[in-house]
Amino acid sequence: PYDLVITRWGHRAPGASAALELLERLAHGPRPPVVVFASGHERAANRALALRRGALAYTDTWGELFKTLERLLTDGDWRPRPARASAP
Image (cartoon, rainbow, N blue to C red; front, side):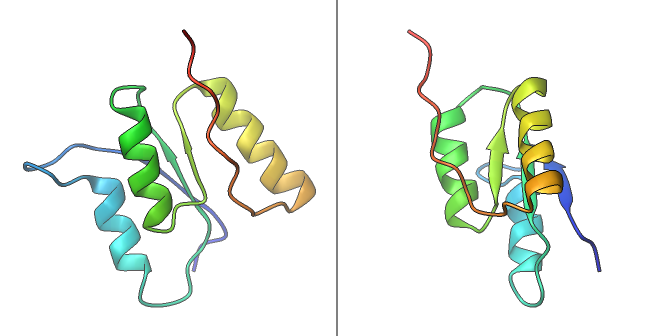
């Protein structure tokens, strides 16, 4: 059992990703919080899909990842956060 899982999105065969496969495997038992760290490519669609599948967060910058981890580890705040506005 893990206290926290950080994974990449990880593109695989058409339509699949390593993160979605991981979330599917973790869906059938006790699930640690999962944070997906990925590029900004297709961010909105991938983020929505990951959160629907049970990810706690989807981050695409180092700063966002570190802020998420800090919030989780210091505040114990395991609630998903709303999507950030995209830059113009």
